[in-house]
Image (cartoon, rainbow, N blue to C red; front, top):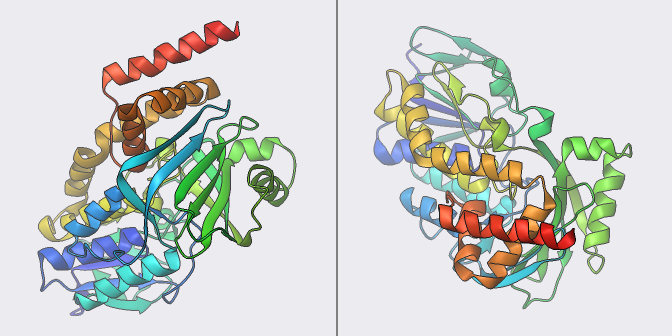
Length: 382
């Protein structure tokens, strides 16, 4: 019991790496252990989009140039369920970096900062008075559970996952595209809405492409999931031939569980932190991981209340905004109105990007502008 870690992090993705990096950044003498069931680099099914907001988090973690060698994607194009279109230059460029690269770099940065990295699959947890014991061998004063959408740690602490109605499923692959293609594109589909396909060029002549929809809508088709997901992707992006197709679940933030129990803090996908409007989760992962790492070293005696408080401060208003918008977005007409308004007003386009990829909220005047267009379009249809 003399070998006690100040922080044990389970899961080496963006949330886990951010937690480990932040703990060592704030307390260079902290003993931090990072555990993951895989060796890095490893693939992870994801859209690979790294928003400008993520770069802000990387800067806070002291690694601002982590993806500086990747080409920025400055333009975003969106087609709504009803065919409204917007294509504009983002206020700040985004990036597309395969998770095989991004996650490995984060883990390498954590290792370089003094974090011990081990390959280990956690299967059990014991709670003592002032520490947690993992698998009977790893003892820590605080634990960050960042082991993904199907989190074992979340189950071990008795926290329920997101319900199916707040869970999406997506398939992701890669396809050849022109080397000069630098437009991130989203193609929404009215059939089975909410549903959309994407094409995010990486900058090397390939693009991350995929299709996602809500899990209950997929099941309602009565067809095999592979048939639906692969078929819809081919329907919306017929010009592209994907390879390395992999499916993954996305626990959306409206169904998020409580953020932990005792000395265990849930972060990233394990905490159900995925934007319900876009499926973006890397920004939330970096923020929640950073805040969990802070709580572990700044409030070591009782980290969870501090983590919950700072998470609410950082994302509370934003998550309430996306909760409301996710309800409104059940109507494809609302999304049509939002995209149509964004095509006419650049400040609305920028706001949609900020809400969909960062921690933005919606000022009342802009919300009213979208609602008025929504109502007007409904009147015209009647």
